Length: 143
Image 1 (cartoon, one colour):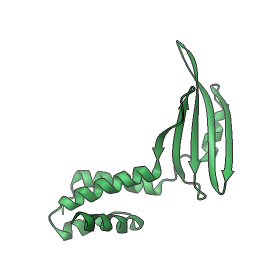
Image 2 (cartoon, one colour):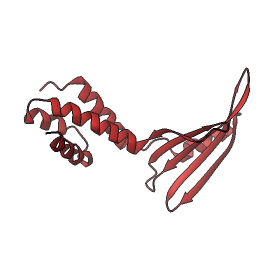
Image 3 (cartoon, rainbow, N blue to C red):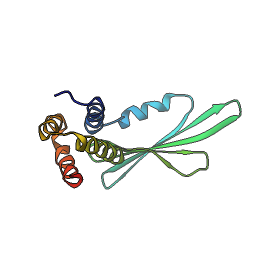
């Protein structure tokens, strides 16, 4: 079967997002040696680790304080990145659950367009096993 390039690309992205833990706290901590980094704070609340990094963004018009907050689950997997620029509130830059949800929806929609159960199964065999059931449930809802 010739897999639709879009489906293959989405599955590759889903697999990478699912399997890659993201930037690790020790890598973030190393940034403190950069001149424009001002502080790095960490907090553990019931196993959920948050690291906040404050740095200055300098340009011709002056400097702006930026805070980036990284949130990890107990398995050291990056779950969310939020950013605060100046006095503005934090804004989500990336969220693992939202990213996976979006990819699952896109994959399910494309798979629903395939005209054969055999084709769908061949594609499903390339998806991480933990996510196959989620896609299968979505496909039954679409059908």
